[in-house]
Image 1 (tube, rainbow over the protein chains, first blue to last red):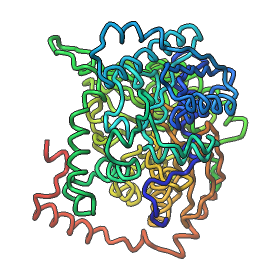
Image 2: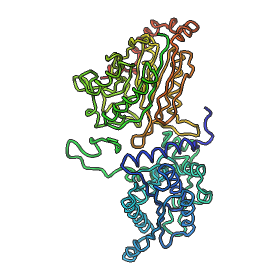
Image 3: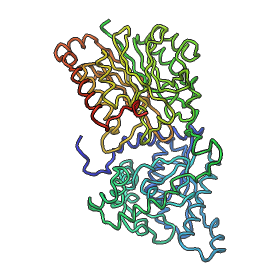
Image 4: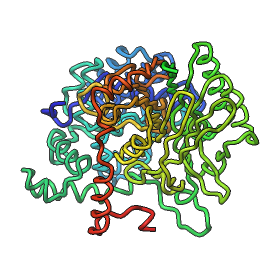
Length: 277
Length: 294
């Protein structure tokens, strides 16, 4: 087999097959038939939504659009495109009345705090609809976000299953394009849309195209940071990313439990979630 | 007997539920019987599921008529030979990943997995004991050798079975799919199929492999059962990712024809191999057998 020109190239049919099977298996083995998903208008949630619709049937998926007063109207339009394309059930709920009184009571809040509150307010609505719709929350976080910790803990990172967590952002784009996510969504600059003008790449200080290639070397191919620098990556960029991965490890694990007994959840009480199913 | 109809079951399992998995085995055995199958092979840990962790002691069995699960399988083996995957509990309460060959109501052979992957996503060494023998055994179709997944990621167990006279290697897996690229199959699927073909070619034996399907949490299992003949030719391939019962008709006379043409076994210099291996083990600290290290 010839070596890939692009180390991040993926086979869309194979990936779709594995991920739709995963969604179906993990939803049904937990005793559900349905999924709930927050659709923002971005490429990650668009892809998750289309995969969930294919896996569970569009009638079994509820897409929630959860705008805030300052959300970009363009994003809402893009979310609508995804809902139309996937044919899923839909509901919209404006989170402004949930979060605004809290913001007013804390006028000193910076953008980060406000953004985190909004992400967690959306989580509350998603999980409430998980109960109301009798479906599991399907996550939308990708591998790049997970590794960089570019996510709000217990906010957008909260889900019952995460089909995209082993795909880098550039791979999400490839797969999204292949399964028919509208181009306007695939091509736009990624944004959490938590404040006006926010973009991921502006906030992170580098592009997904660059960081995905670096992460692939560091994480998947187990290159040392020094070997990445020797392979041509900028030294400051490499150090920044390596440190960022280390600092955000807490977002990728459950809270540590202080061990006292002989058998402790997380250390030596070991069962898969699929236990017995 | 010069023909062998082989059935390869690639099944999904219920994690830790012996009754449910046994019921599925019996259904497939019945189907295979209707198809006049001589030997039906199930994947690794087919009676229990794969990522057992703390479930291991709860699902461990002793392969005999006294065991309610094996009792039914042994009954079923009156009609056709079976290979099943299970957790074996031995008398000293050590637990092995094992494969049992059942025929005409008897346990003909049990193989205990000799290589337990404990790296990357694998944690078998934490929960299971290491098997310590690799033996071929006689069946009514000829001499057979069984290996379980990681056993055949190492070249030595298939090599030993070849020298021990195996004409058919029965390889069973619960192999988690991994290694996504722009190719149409995962790297792990390519790898396993490639070495199966290599063993068939190098050892001029039949190599049958079956692997489970389904998911356990985020792990996928890719199926893709295969049979290669002693020329290394692919006889049959099961579908990827889907449960299936795949049949292959083995013309055992092919062994005679291939080995008449290509006498690799006849010419294998086992004394040379043994002498050089002894020298290497004597002269280097780099190569340690596990049992020596313990």
